[in-house]
Length: 232
Length: 232
Image (tube, chains in turn yellow, cyan):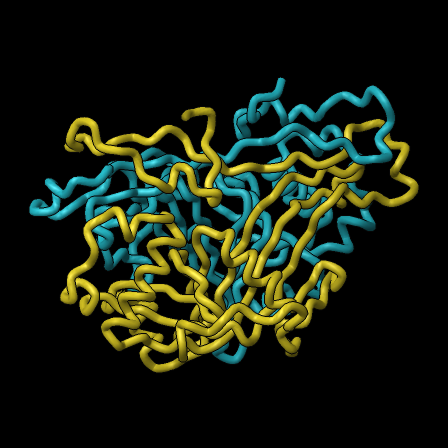
C-alpha cells in the first residue's frame, strides 16, 4: 500500500457488492468516493466490527483517512489487533448525526445523518517511517496541528503501537437530509413538523492543572474542523 | 421479557465475562448498571454488530433503554433483522465523545468519552400493545414528547415494523475523563495541554415547507435532553 495515493478522480465510484448495495431506501445510498471521503474526514471516531468464532464485537476508535485508506492504531495487546494480525475481514462504520426529523406521524420520524459502512481486511503498517506518517495523520485528524505543537513520538513509542490500514474498496455511504416525508393524508395533522439540526461545538479549553502560566492556546481552536461555542 | 422491569438497585453490577472484562486501562471500566444505563440514556444512535458466516457487519440505528433492556426497531426486510430472527448473538455499542485531550506528547493525546459495549441475543417483541409501548419508548428517547404530539401509529403500521429487545446482561462501560496524563519527564515541554470539551446543541428549528402558519414549536425544545444553541 502507499500512503501517498492521491485523492480519487471526480466521479470515481466503488462498485456496489451484495453487502454494500443499499437495499432499504436506495435513493439515500452513494458509492461515490468523494462522498465517502467527506464523511470519513468529518468523523471523530469510527466503530470497528470484527467477528471471533462467528461472534460479533464492535469497538469505537479514532482514525484518519489518507488517500484511499483508513488508518487506525491501538495497543498490540488489544483483542481487535490480535484478531487483525490474521488478516481477517473487518467492518468499519462512521456515523454523523445532523438533526432530528419531526414528521406529522410518529412512523415518519427520523434523523438526518451521513454514514459510511466499509468492509475489508486491514494490513499492518510495519515500516518505522510509514508508521510515523500514519500516526501523524491520525493525530492531526483528531486534533489538527498537534503533531507540530506537541512532543513527537520517539522511535520506541512508534514501535510500541500497532497501526493498521484498511483500503477503501468495498463500501457505501447513506445520507438522509431535508424535511420530513409524511403521507399525503397526514399533511393536515395539526402538529409542528420539520427538522432541528444538531451542531457539535467546542467549549472553552480547560488547561491541565500543572500547565505553566502563559501557555499559548492550541492552534486547532482556529481550525475549520471545529466550531467554538461562544469563546474567543 | 417484561418492559416493566424496574430500574436496578443501587450498586447492582453486571458480572464481568471473558469478553466484557476491561483488559486495557481497567481503571476506566465499569460494570455498574446505573453507569451503563446513564450512557445508554444519553446516546442518540447505537452501532449494532452482527456476524454472517463469520463476516462482521456494523450498522447504526436509533434505540431506547427501558428498564434492563435496549429496544430497537427496523424494517422486517433489513439484513440485520433477518439475521436476528434466528436468535443469533449481536453486539451493541454506544459511544459519547466528551472532549479532546491534548497532552504534551503526541502519544498521550486522547478523547474523553463514555462508551458501552453489550453482547446478547435480541428477542422479537410480537404482542401488539407491547410493541406499541416499545415504539413509544424509541420515539420518546429520540424526540421527547413526540408520541403525544404527533399522529400515533395505526395497528397496521405497528404490525409492519419489527421491534427487538436486547437484555442488559453482559456488557461493560468504559469512561475516560479529566486532564491528559503525560509522562513525568514531559511535564516541562512548553506546549499547551489540557482538555477541550465537545458539546452537542440544537440549532434553530427548520419548519417543513408545507407547515401551516402559526404551528406551535415541539415541546422537546425545552426538554433537558437537548440544549438550544442561542435561540429561544
